[in-house]
Image (cartoon, rainbow over all chains, first blue to last red; front, side, top):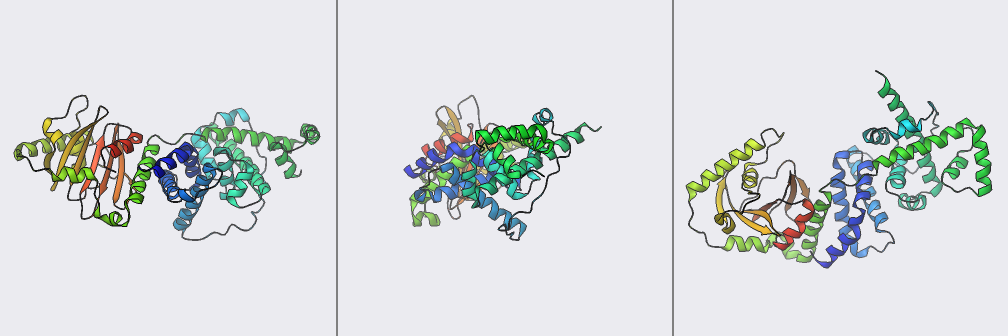
Length: 174
Length: 241
């Protein structure tokens, strides 16, 4: 491997876990998350000589998001315009949230609930809560105002908590 | 929500001034809706922590291998990218004069090896192609490979002529198979689209496999008893990539 390859791996490999999490929970097709990560790194390597951004992690995650979007569009064979403001979806508080119950809920259930969120909310949550980006960084990645990111994350977490409580209640029903 | 959502969001994001935060704390004491929203937010964040898991084992090696291949392609230039180049190990291996060999004995070994491999993978949903299964069955963990295998041994498996040669890399055994025909790709493999040829990798228990099929050139695959993350280094040392 040449110097460029080694320099790329040194810069990009520390972010593999984060890129995998984004791929795993952004793509609707979970089975292709590893392929998506590999493709992300190959695209990033091809453009590495021109990468001047301050954050390699944000750069990799943005490539991964773009690939996930384009693959999703290809699979769906239709283009969904997301330029319009998202409709307000009031979340009925429903059952009171039992924090202890949610804390013990299994990982697979959380993953399933996350997959049920609208794309914009899921994406914002993945980038902030799973990839560890700030709201400002996510706003830059997604090309939307910071307040929109915070709103999507808030509504997404509310919906997620409701889904997990429902799942927990269903689990207790014999 | 009947209360302004922005205020709850600002509170959760830690963006209220100390005075605003004190007022909102007081508000929470009397507003069940905001209190539930704050609790739901915290509970969701707690649940999401479970998803902050590391990448699966083997993914790092797979990505490193794909980058190593792409790096090699980038440095080879347009002539090599068109398929004129073959790893130097392959040129060296196939240039050696054929040694006298006991074809019947070799065939017997292959039949036994393929049979053993077939038995080992009988309960798997999709059996490996016989060429690959036979080479995997030639691995001799814990003991040195035969001198014939170290020198390079010729076989015909499932109608495909191939040569298998054993190597040692930092005390670990590797078998490299080469053939003028492309090897069948196991169904469980991951393709490595960064290469100009058809490259793939797969893991099988503690074994890692990496193969390259070149149209009109020598195809090869390597099987080694090492994690996939160590394969790029080994493959580079053997001049496979």
